[in-house]
Amino acid sequence: MPEKRFNSFLKTKILFFLLPVILFFLLPAPALASGESSQRKVILVICDYLNPDDLNRTELTNLHNFFGEGGIALLNTNTAGARNRQNAAVTISAGRVALSSGAEPLVFGPRENVRGEDPAVLFQARTGITPERGNIVVLDLPSIQWANEKEQNRAEPGALGDALHNKGLKTAVIGNSDLPGVPLSNRSAALIAMDRKGIIDRGNVSEEVLTYDPVDPLGHRTNYTKLNKIFLELQPQTDFMVIDLGDLVRLEYKRTNLTSRVYIQERERILREYDDFIGLLMEKTDLSQSLCIVATTIPTVEENSEKRYFGFIGAQGKGLEEGLLSTPTTRKPGVITLLDIAPSIGAFLQADPDPLYIGRSWHVVPEENNLAIMQKVEKRTVFASYLRAPLVKGYVLLHLIVLASILFFLVFDPRKGNCLGPLLLGLIAVPLTLLLVCLTDITDLWLYLALCLVINIVLVLISIWLARDKNYDSLIFLCLATVIALLIDTISGGHLQRFSVLSYDPMGGARFYGIGNEYMGVMMGATIIGVSLLVTRLKKRLTVQYLLAGALFLSVLVVLGASLVGEQFRRFCSIIDCFWLYLSAIIRDSGAPKKYPGWPYHYRFIMWRCLCS
Image 1 (cartoon, one colour):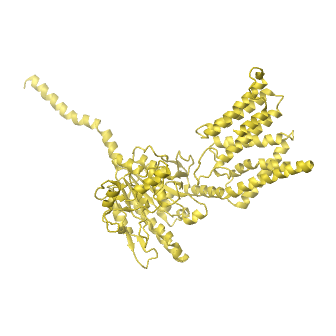
Image 2 (cartoon, rainbow, N blue to C red):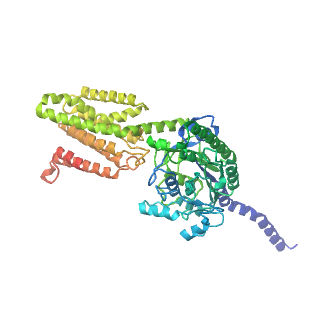
Image 3 (cartoon, one colour):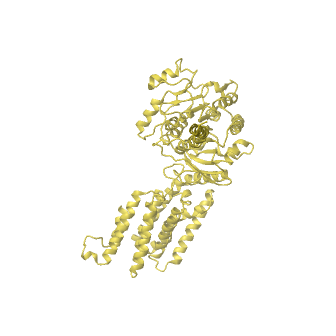
């Protein structure tokens, strides 16, 4: 063989053997990445009306282990309207507070009919969208969209489903909470999995997943044999699946028609069936590539009457360990919101987050005995919420009575008015008392009130004991002690304010971190009064008073304005005004009024101006 031909042959052979190697090293990263993401699955099981106390029962082995060994949290159930199942479902779906149409959603799948009509045909007529064969459709999607447009909350139910569909992922829903004798369906959970078009790829929400027995206390009941079969069929074909077990919803609906004994018996039976299904779910799911979520999205009627508005959620799967779920939305381990569920599911499935999401994806804060911690957080939060209204109203009323008494004695008998001084100091010490009492985890009403009284008396006695000047020092001590305690607690994470009666309510959800309105007012008022009195008290030490007052104003300025702790821009501006006026007074003392006669010239003017702002 000629040398030139041999060299050409050798090069061809080498290239032939090297080409697969080159392709192997060039292609595996994207190929493996796409393969890994396609294997990831999320299963969300809706168990509305499950109680936190049910999770402590060790005989319900699968439920107890699921929550006890995974990431769990209380669930703020705020929506754009009432706390009901349909509003909760569209809120999860939108990733921000949203509204349903006001009635139970009309969700139908193949082989069903609506008063003799084909749901797919009705859906096409209402939306102009032709569903594919096997799709489940939400017939009243236009009503849901109109409700949110009217509310002007910018919510778009179906954002989660859209984000998954844009990624090429498939959604499914199984089960319902249909009620016997009620013509409209009760299939709210399906709204979680729909996209903005009102379409869910696969599933079964029909009566096929129910059994009917006229002598059964529930009438209709979930057919777990059928449910399990559908679940195992759809699991390999879908990436996100919502399962509505439904029986506890039916039981609560029928509660007033059942005796207490029958109600308890049926509830026990349903809990055992739930427990068995969770066992099957965990057995048939590869947790190394999947995420399983069990949630109750609304409080029961009984919990609503007791002002216990929390739901709860548990998750197990890839990247999760025993502990408390936390998100940037709340910044509180053990408390998340309905808005955080969609971003967390999307993040796990590696789908791009919808720009309209308000919620954020969760992470786990490792904790042992997570169930006990979560239930303690709920108990303390509910206790503070229960006390908030009567205690604050009583405090304001007592303030008015004491101030009226002082004014009365100042006019008619000034000597007796002096006796009310310690009582006035006690009222000033109340905000600090209600903060310090949260160092304990007392939830007994009388013990809590007794401890508050003791702390308040001790604070007043200390302020009197430390006072050299009775006109100033007691007030200075109580005001500055309150400010410093609030600053330290806010910077360290607000652990005391979290459970204080004068702070925000995580169940209401208007605020989860920073300083609430009540303590903001306390901090600003105490800062202004305390600094003003301190400046008056140290009038012969100008350098000291300027340094102390400036440090306090700057500290309050930073804590109220910094995004990591305060998130209070309006309050930030008020404190800037306060600090600016204080600098004006310094300039006045330095002789500036000769040059700039418009500068404020008295500390009392500073107090008045700050209170007005």
